[in-house]
Length: 246
Image (cartoon, rainbow, N blue to C red; front, side, top):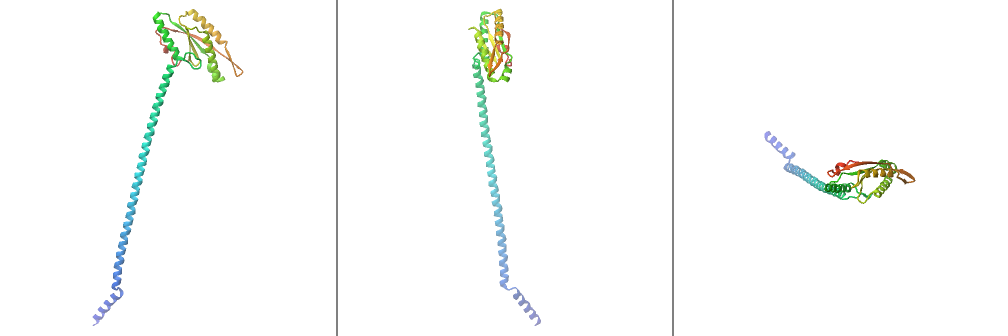
């Protein structure tokens, strides 16, 4: 009897404290919690995948940007290379044109190339006629650099023009008058004896050294020195007048 009562009480207590509905609710809550955890996991996983996807897009975009930049740099380099090649070609063309030009723009005399052309013609004439060597008179404006520095470029140009005018007035039709470089002039006298050339050199020296120029109310004296060089039929102009001359 007592055992039955205890058993009844125990059975009644369990049902009273934990009714069947509560067990069902707990089970449902557990399922809901599990679903929530699963949903949260899926949401976080989707966020992670989206982040990775965006990163890949950014990475691809950066890669495309770098590739575009490299392509533009290559194109720019090609443009620069082509421009440099054109400049080089133009420089060569200008140098070739200068070689074809035989007149000095400032003095209107033969320039270096014009002088060499005339010397080559004279050498050919001497070879045909078995003539003696030709003498060249070299005229140097000794204070040319000083005039340029102290009185200016325009004054120096005026002096050059004045000397060229005097030399042209002293030359015969067969003579060749040239401006070799900035302050140096050359006179070539074909078919002229050494005695006559020496006389003419002395006369030129005296006349040129008497010259002066009034510029900006200031008298500019001209200092000239004269020398002689021999030129034979087998001589090369570039050997007689090296590029660094003057």
